[in-house]
Length: 424
Ligand SMILES: Cc1ncc(COP(=O)(O)O)c(C=O)c1O
Image (cartoon, rainbow, N blue to C red):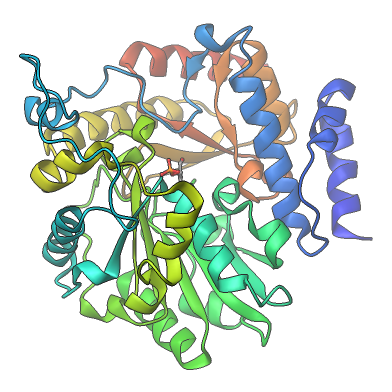
């Protein structure tokens, strides 16, 4: 039986009629290749639309949106001073207005320095281009790589953040490989390399994973990068969730990550919780980054003129000043959420993240046979959590993602509602 049919049949059993048709109605650019990705995308869209329904949006207990509740993390003074081009006393600093297509050269230098310190690499500013957020950057990179290669495929390692890959549906073929929960959703080199075909032009994964928050061991990524390089396949690593580390040791790649086929995409959205500025950067070989006449910089230049220079001062002066106390604030929330979840008998497994502010858990309930049915019951009670089927995992496996970047009372209240629902 075709996979999509089976999945739609499952959906029709678990959703009420209105929700079932709402998911099916989600429109997408058509590409017939990948049913897992399509269904995940549609589910994610449906879930976001319910969480951010203007009628309830302000009353929802926010354990789902994947972003900190405002005010949870105090912004250091050095940040606020560098976030604008105005002095607090009035008057303007030297303002760029428009700026270079790849981002100001001082910004690109600051990012290269920051990356080299973090990963013991030797990037130069020519390896860096500023982009208007990771989603924008990923989709522009896909456009470049598939411009004359629409018959080739992107191989996405799921469960993953499909929302950021939307262009792939209309640009190229799309194929997913789903890494099971018994591997903590963490792929091995073999999982990926055994699936690469002659059609594969790009392998995409998030590191750390979204929803899992787990890092992929560096040795596996090295193996993947080297083998893909030999095969002429690009590796796009979305590192947006590389923030708020709970590891004792810093996660560090090493200079091998500079391989000509590796394209890394980063953003200030999670690392500095500055999503409203829509800024990120791409780190890659200079052939990909290009200049005003070729590559990513040319594309960005003719697409939006130049990436917004709003964070120039921030990048130059504050990029290296990540407030370490943020990790502690987040670790405390993680421990609280994990402790409370573990007290619920119907919660069978809680996966501890290595970083960021999401964790995943598995439940078992005679009443809720899918993650989507639990999601619907929770949001009816104004509690937002994400079903992991929105990231490409089987809805009947009953995994949820909880965002713990919320005040304690919200975590307690949300988990209490969850506990009551699962008790029935
Ligand atoms: C893995 C991942 N990639 C990309 C994004 C979006 O990044 P940006 O805000 O920079 O577009 C998110 C946001 O949730 C994410 O989790």
